[in-house]
Image (cartoon, rainbow, N blue to C red; front, side, top):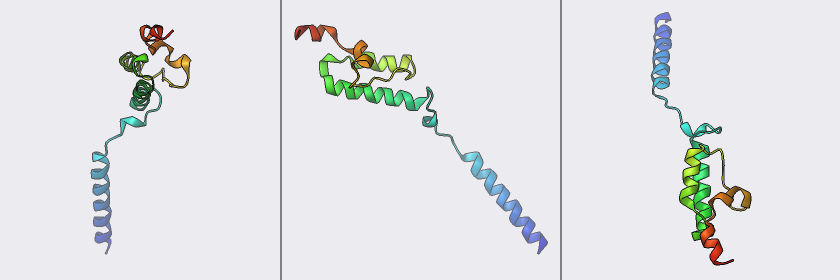
Length: 95
């Protein structure tokens, strides 16, 4: 009886070790400068590009997201956060 319990404990430990060894972490969990923030930044750039069309420089916005690692997140409704990405040449045509 005692040998069966020992065998079960050993099998449980081996299965646990095997499962833990194969677990991979998800890099999108890091909220402070990781992949998740860059993804949000890029998504917001794409959304602003769809909203403002030729008035918004989506390429420059995306490059800034990568360069600053998502520390500056554009908000399409906040002119201060997207001012650097507005295409001034296009805006002057309508001024």
